[in-house]
Amino acid sequence: MDAFWLSFGVILLAELGDKSQLMALAFAARYRARTVLVAVTIATLIIHALSVLVGSAAALALPTNVINVVAGLAFLAFAAWTLHGDHLGEGDASRAARPARWAFLTIGTAFFLAELGDKTMLATITLATTEEPIGTWLGSTAGMVAADALAIGAGALLGPRLPERAIKLFAAAAFVIFGTLLILEGLRVL
Image (cartoon, rainbow, N blue to C red):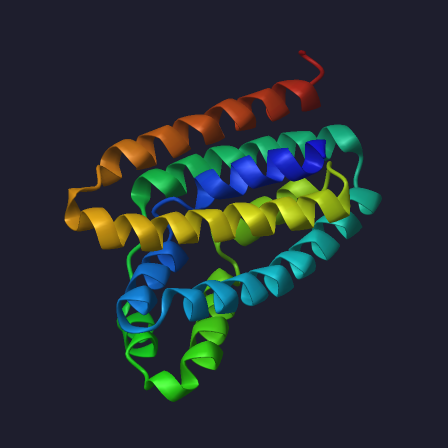
């Protein structure tokens, strides 16, 4: 359960303001929320399973202190990435505008492709190097789906009145704290 809750929290924060969260909002404006949520969930289950496999393999190949320092540095990079932010590109926007009969496949494929190499995928890989795999997989998936569900709901209710800057600052600060703690642990300062 520790791996689940840690992964849930980290990925929830990582997903705030992320490109795929913006995609969820765009898809929800066009398609039924349930269709968007189911497609996002299935795509996320698949991409995060792959991420956990990569992270678990890395954990077997590298010493723990090296993993902690690299993971800490990655989390500091995620903080910077969060502050920089993501934006929907033309390709992402055009995928969101496809006909409804292909909605499920379009949404699932778009999310899968958007997550390849994204900070939530990299954060899941990082978590899987030190945490239990099944809890990490389910927690990271639940965190991402929860963040995307929040985006769909909040976008429908609040629209442009959401304080995007405050959300980014909160998420970035959390990454700095997690990253610093991991680096200190890897260097055996803690």
